[in-house]
Length: 109
Image (cartoon, rainbow, N blue to C red; front, side, top):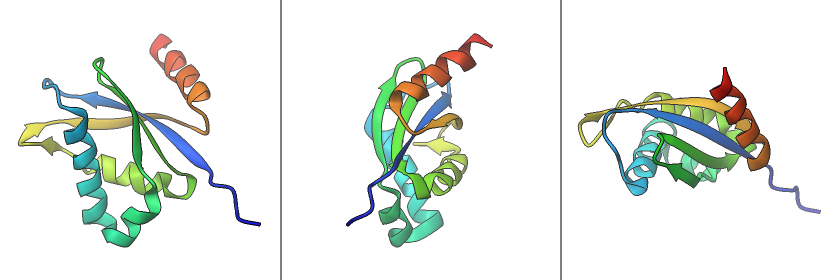
């Protein structure tokens, strides 16, 4: 019987003065993953963007074994199109519902 696919959802805060299209942000993350881990590592992440809000919040989905790889790749991103940006993972969860709950708790403090 095949192993069930387990996913993790990451909430990422974008700190920048600029606004970026969804496509440019995910391409920057993919480029960082390719630089750090190569094509084989990138294939293991199962990365996809779930949500991008204008209040500088991003929700990504990846495989549970690749969370550390995705976090490392995000930490290495400092510029998109020569415009400065900082990305911080503020919460990780196994479901979107729990992730949204964690986000609201961190905004309250």
